[in-house]
Amino acid sequence: ITQIFSMADSDPTIQGIDVNHELMPLLRSLRSTVLPVLWFCVVVEGPRLQLMQCSKRSTMADTTVHIEPSFHYHISVQGQPLLPTHKLYDSHPSCLTATKEIIDLLEDLE
Image (cartoon, rainbow, N blue to C red; front, side):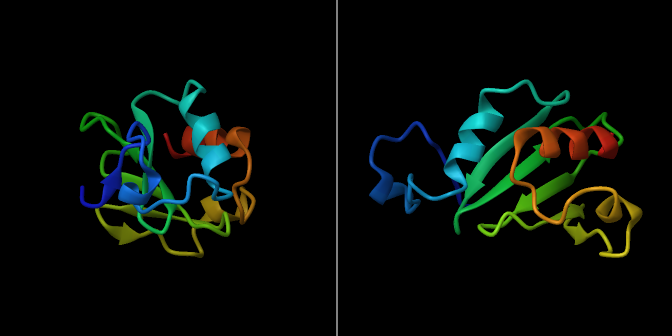
């Protein structure tokens, strides 16, 4: 995984991430919440949030939920985007602004 930045670093200019960006409260909320098994949230350049399934034994191995600065999201599996016509997109909001919405999406993925 390239260009992942640790929130533990004390100098945000080194990270290249605005710690006051509107996605950061969502990141903090996700990190303080119990997510479905072996899903983990990281911030990447942009900034964007990525939620990744970290278990190779999961049926959702190699699945990533990408949340853009606008809170719009898309899902990729093995680096390939899930088609925008997939029923999963119809059953969830087009923007994920709350931790509960994200957890609901992850649970539906599993």
